[in-house]
Length: 136
View 1 (cartoon, rainbow, N blue to C red):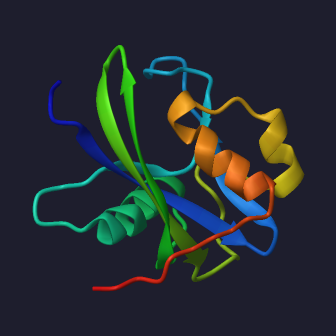
View 2: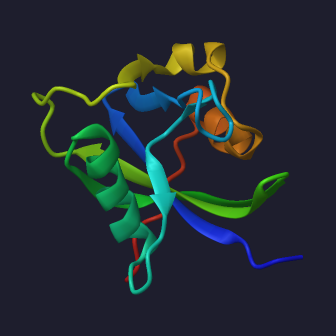
């Protein structure tokens, strides 16, 4: 097995709504919904990567406030290690970059997420927002 690519995922919660986007048709896992996130760069923590990726993808400035869970998953295109980071928006007045939008907790069940997101989506839908505190 190859070493998994480390990915930081920003699970941005604003009240009872979550920030999600739909993958474009020219991307791997096209059409699936996802939370903002991406590869952790050299010298960067998962918390820093989640905050950076969220801003780059959505235009929303967030603060990392805790950790949900870490999942390892193998896809045909590679092995991934996803760190789901609890984030809060620092401003709610900015316009979102497309294709991102806010959805409420109940809507999460209606959206198709990649397999690696199953555990976090189930946790959020069931209102078990278990966030571990950040220890740096």
